[in-house]
Image (cartoon, rainbow, N blue to C red; front, side):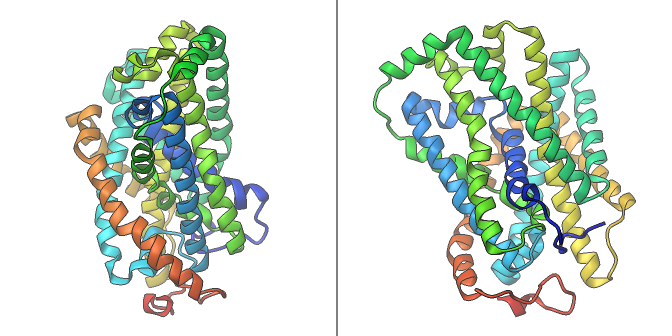
Length: 387
């Protein structure tokens, strides 16, 4: 099994330039705009054109931060979040880890609650059953390490993109005139920048979640290109979905699940099932990325301290332990309460311990480290050697 610190000798174009963006997209869709609620909350409140402007701003911020994150990870061979923040913050990395573990518990609990709601809506099964199905799928996908995780993102991405394309085609066929009319009479954009900045900050931690999948990057050029591509790869389905939502502006702003509202308007039961399965797939991608990041953090410590990797049984045990706790949290508090109780607060913490340090201290370190540094993943090299 290839370790997080190893670099593939024959990395493909997909692995170097597309895989990071596809993985980032998977986290953002599953943890963000799959239901359309966040698009209404952060963008539609600024009107059709203001929403588009805010989404473009968020996309540009994602590209910029992802490029810096990927470049820093490649330069310091830091392909798990502990190595990354040890190189960026020194001893202060522990602050990020505390917030990150809480974040992972929260978001995976949200994914489990959402999967439970999908299972109940499509198949009429208990909410807990849907959460358990998602948990089992996450365990299976993360059990074998990086290779199985990469396969998930490679094959799930075309399905997700296809569903969004079909959705837009059906929407334009059914209510395209309403979309055009609302864009034609929309007022000038107002207060759109705040929504774009807030939304970008809220989701960009996905760039940290997918660090284990960056090991194929062969140069800083690879990292920057992959990072710049990540923004558009993650945002274009959201823009398509947002354009369709405009057909029912402004009333759709108050809908709890805009996706279900629009699917009912389409009145296509078969596609409605397909769309819900797409959301489940996006939740799976996000959950896999989150659990895999924890596994790779443990794997890195074992390799540097004991020169042994994390085996399949251990990966399954870690995943099961985390997921059992998350399922309990999801069942106890429910989807809406989970989102309301912790997402935004943790996002502000990440701005302070991730985005601001990266775009200041991290950029300075990259500039000073123009050549290839010694590898912090080497057990003989201490974190202080790369600071």
